[in-house]
Length: 358
Length: 256
Ligand SMILES: Nc1ncnc2c1ncn2[C@@H]1O[C@H](COP(=O)(O)OP(=O)(O)O)[C@@H](O)[C@H]1O
Ligand SMILES: [Mg+2]
Image (tube, rainbow over all chains, first blue to last red; front, side, top):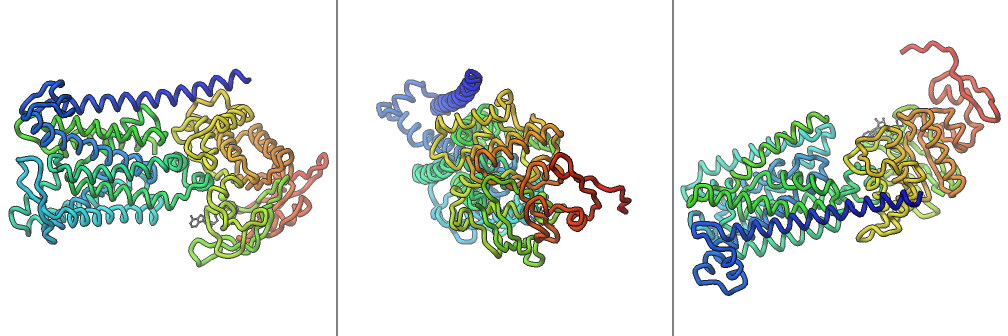
């Protein structure tokens, strides 16, 4: 008997060890991908030169290429990927819906509409964009971010109200509601374009694409702070998310304040998604795909799923963005389009799997 | 002791789902909550567990109003097994470990793991420790959720129809275990049951509910043929067999 119990305690410990290994491996892979991405572009640099430049002893030309152009872009990819993926993992848990994420629920689209509204109607101004081929300049990012947050939250509120009012809605029903909201906000953005002058039209178009080149170090700092804070909240609640997975009633009886957890988590998710969208535009499906990718390795244990999703999202976005930069170089494709190509098939597979289970 | 005093509850402020319900859940005793579908039995358990908040009346646990306790404190004292548990893709070991949730500070301790190990042994679930919940039979699943509730080390245990979908052997195993808990570990138990004979055999307190309120509350003597006819609309005969009552339905023709 005693030996027996020893055995599966060991099994438990080795399972945990495997999850930790998965985390470390993904982290290493992401670092490698980042260095790789730093070395590639219109000027190819050697890995040694990349590392030297990062350590502050590179040549002047590589300094400009890395510190002013590539590094901000890649750090932005890491932060935005991590933000979208952690918020996706959390939404999937609190809404008990494997298809939930900022872009499938219309939160990103709402935020993009808000951003467009901020520029066109409230004349939100101009920050310089890091990448030369983006003509749009926006100089008051805060009104844009605020509008993005308001409309991103509007989507969230509608989604939450729907889950409360119609309990039989089900996972697919909720995603249909997300589709409706997305079309509504995309239609809104189109209308805004129709009435706007030309420079502002390109602003709106730019927002619906997603472009990591538009984030400078200032925005990156904000993204980093936002990510750090939301990540801390998510990690502090990791046991609550685990409990939440076994149903609302069970979670409550285990001492979880499920209503507060749902509301605060969803607010944080829409806030972080709105900030990400207002800086880099809509990047769809990363929030959906990254958590599911990591579930293959660490299961549904939110102790590991939250940090692993963060890394997985970062990795995914670095790869997608590097692909977008290089595939028909020197033209840089919008990364949002690449992630959509990547994400749509995964989304369909999940939908089919879910439909089979219902 | 949990004391439920004149509890009233409604979902929509129009009609009462619980109407002035009073009863007690005492340590060392098993309370059977009996009544027709929809009479409010599950709602009563959820009010005791503060999943729902009763509009009127009070619930105290060892003379402390439950509203003054934090959710975590409450979870250390009352464990609850809902009528339907989600069979998620979670390993049995992890599912039972979740019962330690109210005690976990930052991470699980060695003691938490030992408690889980002991419970798995007690429920003969060791062979299933690495299986997933969505791959278990009804009986195994019920044992897992009961083990999770016991991992909370509660003073009171609320079970909502724990014998649903179980074969006779499993029904008796579960109820025997629960009865032993009450008698040996001084736990106060409340069970919603539909099988009156099981209730009579394993419980020693009875709450008969009708029209959202208490029809009768007391020990086994309140279970009479007349009471059962009133509460369930069912005609029965009660026979004595080895000191326990046995309820046998009469040959009545009911119109559907
Ligand atoms: N979430 C809910 N919202 C509105 N009415 C409910 C809800 N849950 C249960 N009810 C109603 O409350 C009454 C009591 O339900 P319940 O306590 O589940 O009965 P039972 O005794 O079968 O467990 C029923 O009429 C039911 O329709
Ligand atoms: Mg019920």
